[in-house]
Length: 77
Image 1 (tube, rainbow, N blue to C red):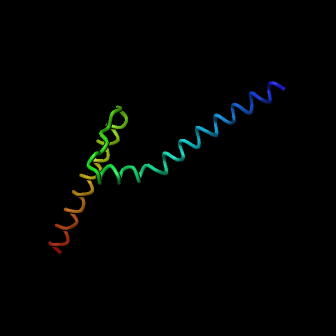
Image 2 (cartoon, rainbow, N blue to C red):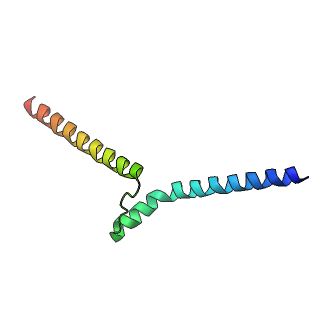
């Protein structure tokens, strides 16, 4: 009988963790919009977040360079 309670606790905790992750994932875009609107944008705090921000900036720069290159080519043609 005790094993059944242990299993129930395990699956209950697991369901709670998945629920929290799901809610956080769903609300992240709304949180970003609210922070941007109020001027309280979140700064990256962990190493992984800093790397992700840096990669995003690099990706944006590369996209901008590609657009400029395409524009120059179109002007020539």
